[in-house]
Structure formats: C-alpha cells, structure tokens
Length: 493
Image 1 (cartoon, rainbow, N blue to C red):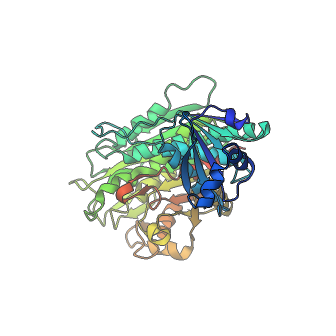
Image 2 (tube, rainbow, N blue to C red):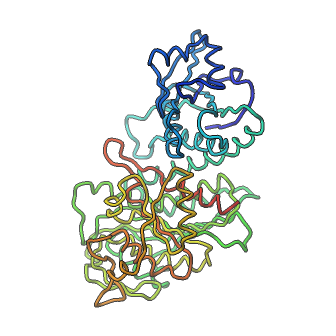
Image 3 (cartoon, rainbow, N blue to C red):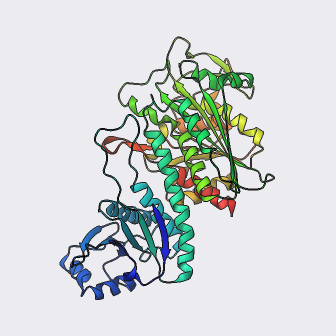
C-alpha cells in the first residue's frame, strides 16, 4: 500500500474514491464539494439518508461515466481520541469494501493534529486490509485487496509535510500489527517455538547498510540449562517441541544509549500441562503466544520507521504439554535468579517462563523493561475485552504507558502492586508459589513477576483480554503493538 500526502486542488487528484469526514453541517471542503455537485451531499442529509453521526458511513456515486464515489464519514459527537479513532476505522473498513484502487482521504472534520490523524488513517487502512493466508491455504481464498494508493489531503503545504511523517509511522505500526496477527492466527502445528525463532532470525536478514542494525540470537534448551533457567525449562519439559529463548537486538541509536527491553510471552500452545484446561475453547490457546508475536510486530515497525532508539526483544517460546516428562503440581524448581518456586498449578506457566526471561533482561542494563503476556483470565473478569491490565514498579513509567495508550487508542488500565497481594504467594516449601489463590489473580501474577524485576524500572501488560477476539470474528488483534510503538516513539524524541 502506498501512502502520500498532498495539498493540491482536491478535485484534481486522480482517484476513484474520496473519503469525506463530515457532520450534518457541511463546512470547508465538504461544503465546497457539495456546491460542485449541485447540492447532492446536502440533499442526502436533508432526506435522512446520512445523519453525520459518529462512524456512520454512506457511499454515494458521482453521476457520470467516471465511476467515482464519495464515502461520507460521520464525525458528529466524535470528541475523544478513542471516538475519533473509531470514526477513522469505520472509514477504512468502508473504503476496503469498495473496489477502489486509488483513494483520497480528506484530512478535515476530526483532529487538528495532522500528523496524528494521518497516522491513524494509514494504520487503520493497513489493518483493515489484512487477510489471513498461509500454508495450508484456505481453499476459498479471500478477495484480493485492490486498493493500492491512499492520498491524504490537507489544505496547506506545511500540514502536508507533517501528515507525510504521520502516514509513514502509521503504516509501519499497521504492518507491525498485521505481522503480529499473522503469527497469532497460525495454527500451533505450524507456529511452534522453532517457527517463531526462524521468523525472528528472518528479521535480521537483508538489512541495508546505513540502517539500524538488527541481530537475532536464539538460545537452545542446553544453553538455557547452563544459565540455570529451571523455571522456563520446567514448562517446555512436557513437550516434544524444544523451547527457545529468542533475543532480537534493534540498534537504532548510539551504543551508549540504554535499551528498552520488551519481553513477550510465547506459549505457542497451552494445554495447561498436567493441570489440564477444559476442552471448550482450548483451540484458542494458540493465541497464548501473542505477547511474543507483538514483540516481533514492534521490531517489524521499528525497522520500517528506522526509529532512533535501542530496543531488545526477548521472547521465551515454549509449548505447554502433558507428557510423561511434564512438570507436576507440587514440584519445586529453581529460577535463573536463584529463587525457588513451588508450582501449584502448571497452567500458571506464563509467569514461569517470563521470570527467567526478566532475569536475563538485566544483563542488557536496560533503561526500562516491559513484559507483554496473555497471562490471566482474571484480567478479563476485571477489565473485559476493552483494555489491557497494567502494573508497574515505577509511577513515571506507568503514566507514560497510560498516556501512550490513550494517544494510540490501545489503552491500558493500572492495577495496584501492593505488599498485601504479594503475601498471597507464600509457600511452605519454596521461596514462593506460582499462584496466589482464587482472588486478584492478575495482581498476584504481577507480584510474582515483580520479584524478578527489582533492579530496573518495569511494567507488565496483561493482554489476555485484548490480544484476540472470539466468536465469528475470531482472530488476533495485533494489540499491544500500538501502545508499545507510541511509548518507544515518545522515548526516541
């Protein structure tokens, strides 16, 4: 998809579709277009065919043989960032439903921030154009996307220059989200820990000279054993698929600049182990690697934007299966940090692989560490499928992430990380248990992780409710790539 910005005469730009954000009262470009069409738009509003309410769309065809169309996009009532993003997403969806090859998006009617709005437009068009396609292929292939070019139109040259920057960033974030979605949607017999490792290695190949340097290292189980990662290895013990610790190093800034480390949980399939999950809905446990997929999505976007920042992505990748070698409830393991863990529930495995990865993260002397995990069903009970749960040992970092979530539309909500919750992890036989009982499951899981992050600033994103959707629209969402990229962009400025 090609995105560009223009301040040329609107009607002179070659396109077969024009997306026109407007409320019921036509202003600026909408009023001018209506006048040039002899009142066709205002007639539709007057007749009640289009009310202009937030996220409403209507496709109208321009009379004549040109085949051109205008997609009216309602903006009335869209005052918050989240509402404005929903409007833009509705416009992108409507556009992709047409056979358009070239489109013009009028950059009026919503935000005055041309860079932000153009970025959301590009991101939304990219994600709306996603089609799952992989071997083994679906016999009934989805319709090919015909849209090739989107021109974001603004009235002035200065705004066009700013919008161009936003388009590049937004397109990269959209591509990163789609990369994460693709990995998440793959069946677990294809997307194994080894497959994820191969995808991470592919990121480091073919980088042109003069660009940010990307390197990938994959630690084997033998190497992890030498590092005393007994907690991580206790999860992969029950699978015929060997576990891997994937480390992707993106160097976009000076070597002296401390990196942000992103740690993404990647359980490529989670049966629960010996603490076997119920059968209903277990197919969706292929999505238990979406944290790791989001890290790969972010690295994709960083490469595309060439963002001037150092980022290390760490992905502990395992499969949680119940064979004769599997860890049992009541077993005690020793983590890389030296702390011992009584495993009361083998289905609380995400924290077991993350804790060793978080200890490993310390060797990079990080500025900040953020882990991303589909960690607890409890977060869905607390926050539903709307927002990620966020916990942190640093108030400034927490506020930065909350702000990044608001601006990107990929929101998070902070939960407490108090000593009273940490006490629930007590064990009679080890330094800690891997579960804290039936209450406050999201918080006690984060308390567990916090015991391995005392040497640096750290935040935890529990994305179990936001990483994928169920039902007829089942599929990975690509979240939280937007919030992570927005945070990294704020650090890179």
